[in-house]
Length: 391
Ligand SMILES: *Cc1c(COP(=O)(O)O)cnc(C)c1O
Image (cartoon, rainbow, N blue to C red; front, side, top):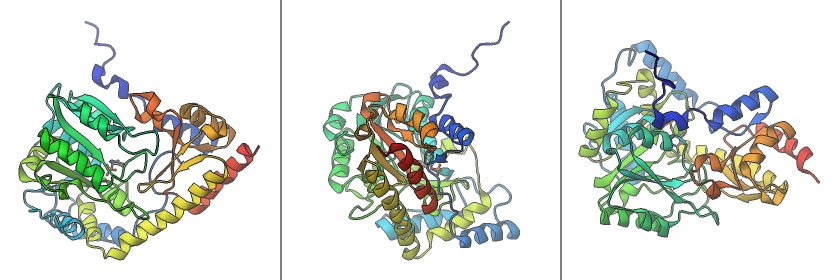
């Protein structure tokens, strides 16, 4: 008998290549400056490195830690949600530690979505969402971020809901657009979730990365929403240690219980000593979180003003690691074409929004640039582009 060919299950076939692989390889081959992938090029606080080191040396977390997370970290997560958002959580039942926000999202999807259930996603979306809905045999339903201002199209959200809708997957601050949902926008989502008895999975990986007048509001804090919301956080994004992969989900005991059931059969446990370190980070004084933002804001403004000077239409982000530009003022019509060309012509890598869309027209002219890089790196990218794009 021949082996089945190809071996990959068909629902995952569309997910076998990633734009990040393609673009990172281009960056490497061409020596281009990579503003594609969203990870900081400087590490987080030395205190946390010391804390992880201490945990390893003291023998805390070197063997399988408790399945749902080290109690000290679960308490620290509960304290953090109380301190910043006024949310009261029981760390024994309402919190689960995960292998990054990614596993929290995947486990939530696998725990809640029956085959054929519809999951609403704001489009463009974080690329992992597509794959995890397919893994769960769910049906993706996209709701566009309006091309004018990159705000959620709430009328389309209202009409996208059907009898099969089970979950709204919310992400604010939003990757890739940098949009921070306002209280009014969140209230619209909440009203629909309550009216149609939906669950909201709220990806708050960038909860501390917002700027100017914007503020992050967890949808779980809106009236009637706590009991139907799973809130997801990322130690990687909050403490600039994306390689440690400590994340979490919190919410009511029945929803978190469902997530725990699935998650224990995925990675079982992970990151033992890092769990202890992240617990210390969550208790940092407010100045840590303020400095994280102000450092990133400086970088946003450096890259944003530089891109504007080059002639791009810059949509200033309210949060996240990412700036979006419209490439049409530079004579391009298509963001993907632009991103495939500039590593060769300008020696810079960026990511087109359309790879985060099922409906390519939603993201067509938009390009995402990561600004979580050292100022010299951002300036270097701008200098390279200046010699390419100056008429
Ligand atoms: C980076 C990111 C994640 C994944 O976070 P990890 O903690 O690294 O797994 C989830 N959601 C969004 C929107 C992200 O940008």
